[in-house]
Image (cartoon, rainbow, N blue to C red; front, side):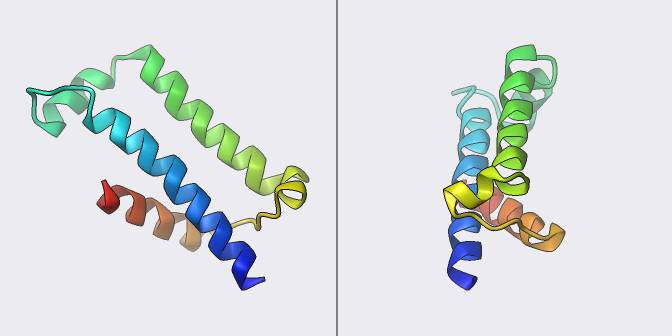
Length: 89
């Protein structure tokens, strides 16, 4: 059971880190907060971010999780993976 949770947390960290990397690399000249202000209005970025979270929820909290050999994460585990992904970027 622990290996399944670890595998799931690793996958979620990779997904979230990729979203953070896209946001960070969206500008080569602006600071992160200036870039983030601009990205709030970007509909494509919203679609990608929401789509990624939807895909994660689909993979973790539906019968697809059994096929992918993933475990549903608790709220605290998900927050922990979010924090790790944020600081990894």
